[in-house]
Length: 270
Image: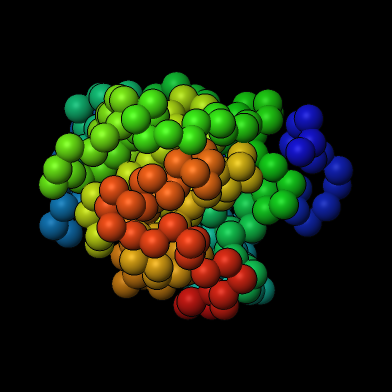
């Protein structure tokens, strides 16, 4: 992996810069927003979600990129790239000022996830990844731990296990994007989603690319395609620092660790 993210002039560099600008536009917008928790007309949607969405979309649409957003759906653009956007991943954390919420963006082409930016909106940490080039936090390269055993692993999870999970330590932190970035950073050893249909592409794609480029194994617990821009898709995210740990995680939730999200499959929705 490279020592630092690539900086040579290229369309890839322009794309990455656009994703960063969109994430920082969200950070700037919510800093001026007084009532994050005000409801909107859409059930479950809050003012912070709408304001963040508007800020990111202004940047992405100016760059003529197609967008699929959790908050506003599909927006057309030029070319085949689609940016999958979660303006605020971890809204429930944000409105209570629990410091674990982020903006997640992932550019997807016909081969899958191409480039990602996840901005931790409470700490300012910037996570980035480019397919087959690596993953970085604030410009420094990321690498997962070498943990191979569930009984020694520190796991971040979503949902509730039906039986003792068998890990050494577990934490539920309320942002799938940041959980996957924690895995990439070596903060945790794995991520388990105990709900089979809780997470949509905007929740996990950005963090997934960061984690995979840092060496993690990522799969859906029911072998559905992960790299999709289908707004109706829902997945069960399982991620681990090593194949051995993934086998243990998959066994714990009743999945087959030998299939990891159908790599190379056509991207659904493009």
